[in-house]
Length: 214
Image (tube, rainbow, N blue to C red; front, side, top):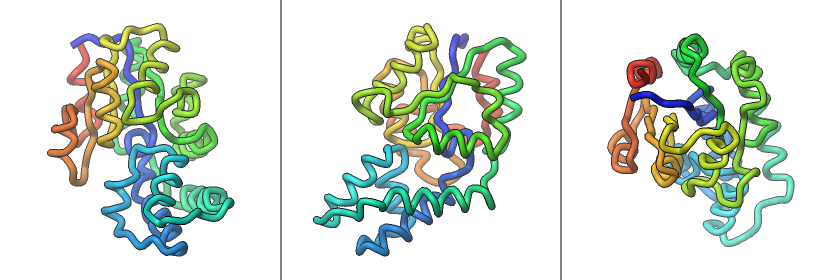
């Protein structure tokens, strides 16, 4: 198919941050009495904003997390990113080819601008996006609602039906489908069937995006 815009999620799609961040989130929650496996952390939080992470966690705990919970977690996470973070395999090849083909692309993520600035900077991917970076703070509702993706498409002056969304989370896939976009769901781990049921075309190699775009 021919698309006028490719929208990329950030964590788990552009940068391989999820394995690092989910372990640190698991540890941070355990310190405050919420013991979860990494797998459950992934099922519960991946694709959600950090505000949603706090809200869900407090509901599960039945009590408030410390006011500095996110600040402390972010400091530890950024330090780990500096040591370990890499770009998702094959993604730079995809971005270079999209640029060569003159296909527009942007980022739409639940992650904060500060976090994306850090992760895209560390991995060297920031140069490809300029100011075409959007996040859930700019809309009323985050994933799984379509608001963020519709906002990104509007900012890029492209109709939703002409957009291809690249996601890795169930809430993200659901939001893209609700926005009326075609969604490719990247997964090298589990949840392939769940991503498929949510409406995503599951891929395990980023270069498959190029074969899907004429």
